[in-house]
Image 1: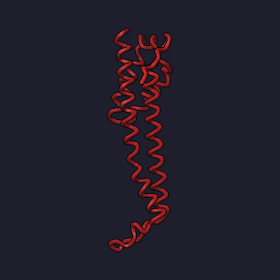
Image 2: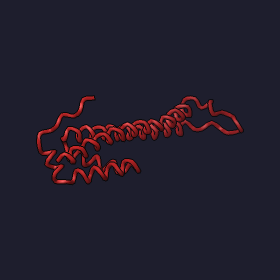
Image 3: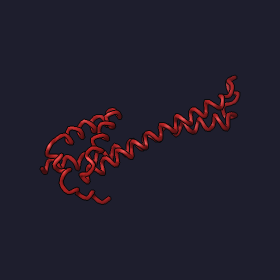
Length: 141
């Protein structure tokens, strides 16, 4: 029983770490958004060097849209991972934790490792029993 509690605690910490990494790396497409903004609203920045024409404004809008979508998906994934870690620590919502573990398998390689270990731990009958008992308050901080 103590081993399962320790595994849940460690998985919770690793979910927090992966959520932070995901949020940071999800900010990389900000470069696409900035470039798209420049293409759409200040095309003269790209004007006339080496005989090239300015990019069409629609290309800038597409850059902003896809960059914004990538950022939104990354931040949403980070929030889900954070909530998964929070619920693992509190031993609540095991189905949500299981679904987050399955989805995190898409974020290779770290998410895959974390997702597989979380699925293995959550599949144990002894861990299911921990979720069935009174929830433990998550650690402050």
